[in-house]
Image 1 (tube, helix red, strand yellow):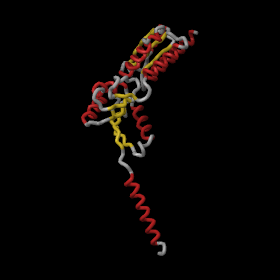
Image 2: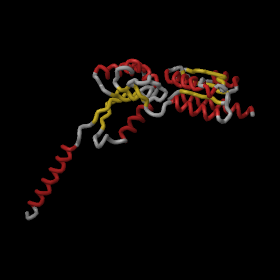
Image 3: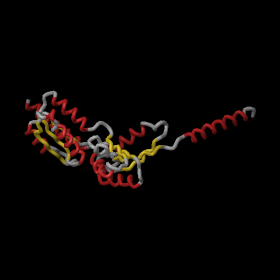
Image 4: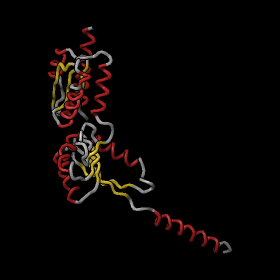
Length: 242
């Protein structure tokens, strides 16, 4: 009984500490983000959500991600972007797909909201409300082509998908190859394939006949494996020819 007053003091102190911590906890900062949680690009959405959550808050303020699933579909992404406009959202992140960002770029480029697209191949207009996370694929392509050019390689071939992501990569490659410093480089082959194709044997056969020194590919997700198998076959053939 002699320790009862002390116990009461400790209990009151504990309750006060818990209450103070609860009161001091700031409200979470809500961030709208468009991710591909389902569909062919779902591996991107899951990874990005996990990464952002691991980064913690902003100046001690916790972050609550308000996720909208674009289902890896440009049409759904456009609907989500329109809903952001209707709700007068000031800024949002996403989509991880070039085709999705390209689908809604025109409706927000001039008047907003601000968007940080997560797909580097996208090239938003200068002065627009759209930004791209990470290094621009155009800048990366410029460095890549220069690397091969300075090593004496002059014959290039392209293999890209027929979707918006593939078109964005293709446009970037063609734009860089057309620059004055690359006037001695030659595009000897340019092939395309559907993202759902499981083989690029026909395209690889055409490219082999053109005898390129460098094969440039452009896609994401599952089609990347299809490209890699074709690239391995081309490399094996070149090694045998030597």
